[in-house]
Amino acid sequence: MSKVIRIGTRDSELALWQATTVQQKLDELGLNTQLVPVKSTGDLVLDKPLYELGITGIFTKTLDVALLKGDIDIAVHSMKDVPTQLPKGIVKAAVLERAATQDILVHLGTDFLKGKGTIATGSLRRKAQWLHRYPDHSVVDLRGNVNSRLLKLIENGWNGAIFAKAGLERIKLLPKDAVLLDWMTPAPAQGAMLIVGLEKEKEILAQIEPLNHHKTDICTSIEREFLRTLEGGCTAPIGALAEIKDQTVYFKGCLHSLDGQQQLETLKECTIELVKDFGKQCALEILENGGKALMESIKDELNTIH
Ligand SMILES: NCc1[nH]cc(CCC(=O)O)c1CC(=O)O
Image 1 (cartoon, rainbow, N blue to C red):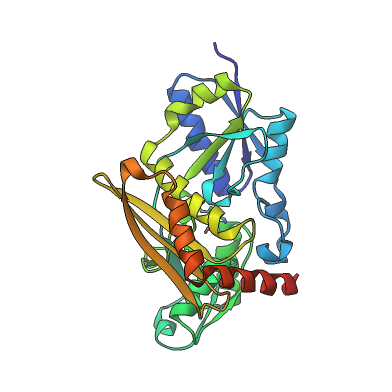
Image 2 (image 1 turned 90 degrees about the vertical axis):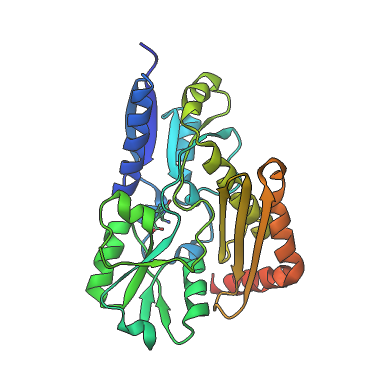
């Protein structure tokens, strides 16, 4: 029998579903595994918008520490929650095949879409894109795990709240009448799961590698390279989606002002062999076309909120 691989996960229902899925896939490869749930700061601090906490990686930090301390061997993350720069010593072990990439609106009736309304989200990206499309609406902050966000929507009587379709599907809480937001550009790597491990544990990395889904890996790498180049370590309303059809990669990326009034967008394509630096080129195009100034003003605005 091979050594037991300890799988670290957050303890929300979604995180546990994702980690259990990874565990099943590793079991199918004939590996021995054990789940180790870990509480994360992102799940504990509920009274402040995420961007006000002023740190990235809030969901992933606790698992990073557990990895580096040797308490777990691998960690399973929603890839969109993982900072583009992994901590020193921690590396990508595999990216799993992506589920739905889109955002979805859960609502208490859709009449408000034609007039005024209040929707809830804790995401700068969703807020800005929503206000760009519905300038007469209000957006209120909504934090917490997926289950508690659904409860708060009902309690507060807001018109709707925005979720990742993949997350709601995974925990079987997707209402039948939810509205797919096809026009909204998702977060980089939305719908994908990332397994990370320690760089020095080559044997474990080799055992996990067969779970890597090549196309998802390519697309999410482009999206995250776009994000890394644009943001330079700051949070901002940034969306990105890469898709492969035949041998071509189609990319859509956008940056909005916090109030949604300004929108910078790029649509580009590239053959799959030439994909190196593609995400960076897409970001540079936005930066050169007004993105640099917009990023500066977003940074200033967020600093005055802190
Ligand atoms: N930030 C929380 C988070 N991280 C990953 C998902 C869902 C799964 C995914 O997008 O991959 C969610 C919930 C949501 O955005 O509604």
